[in-house]
Image 1 (cartoon, protein in one colour):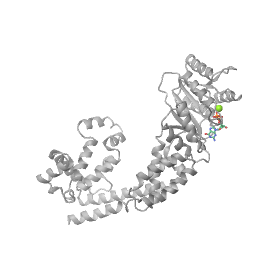
Image 2: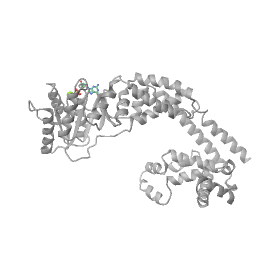
Image 3: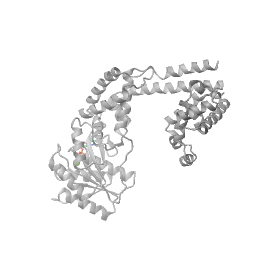
Length: 444
Ligand code: GDP
Ligand code: MG
């Protein structure tokens, strides 16, 4: 009778894990579409190639969630990979250096350097209460220095007075000097661009860098930059050495493929995005949003996520049914452990609970850390199906076999069994209540 309950639940759980693995053919078919989407989004060809290769490796053999098509599953994998490649949210401008911290803005003409200089100054001033000085090093276009001065007036930011005839490098040195004297925390150097990359520009940028010792060098690029993005980012990074990227005109129609291209070739974080002409229209970079936009497929991704959620919900319901019946075997314990691991292990769980982060070290000292989880999982997976379903079977000889199979000892196994017994008792006590897994109960 016990066995049959076990089998019934087993088949439900197996049914939930999907309908098989992605085949080479599934993946290739889907990747053809993905490739097209990436090229339409203006991701550079060489980046598209290396990206789809990476995805192919991950996708072939991956499990397909039920209720979605294999192609959608590939898209989900593509999306996740894209988010990962685009990098983290909230890598902010680094001001961790002796004042005045110099931020140098570089990029092509019209990319948005001057506007972004003003936006960053405005943000540092209003949000971080920093005293900022801006200096225009653009001596090529007559109106450029005046443009920055007006932005300064508008945003209440100091600008370096213009002295006619000075070279960009001299202005840079003077700006740093003026900031020291003026007690400014930050100096923003707004450099001149060109319509395309050329040798004089690179030499000028390198020279400005040498004279002003910037802590941040931000490459500003229009989100609509297409195949050139790779060349642009690579050149500025190799010749000048950038610390981050700013993508402007993300408020426009562009899909933002340049974000992926430039990030892929430089490995530098996208620190900010421009979303309009106004001083306040500067945003944090959110890789998920940009990934959605590049793929133009947010709805499929959420569909896949929904399917994954449903599976979790159905699993939780199955667990609740078991709890009601008072049965909680080692298969269930393994499920709970892997659920905890999915939440980032002990460290992740502790990090999520307010006031608990200090506990992490204490628990590690007591041996209650992620290694313990791994050991417990190893023990359970060294057991037979029958042993997992019925821990009472575990007498001396079986324990010995399991210990050698999992690289643990009898004491470890006894500890696990004790923990399981305690949890099973708790489950029985909570059995009447509704709800999902152990962790849900613990975390309310
Ligand atoms: P620079 O030559 O690199 O200094 O570029 P500018 O800062 O002068 O910007 C060129 C044009 O782009 C200006 O008209 C700006 O108002 C506009 N611009 C800059 N950033 C953005 C943005 O994020 N969104 C939009 N819509 N326009 C922007
Ligand atoms: Mg400018």
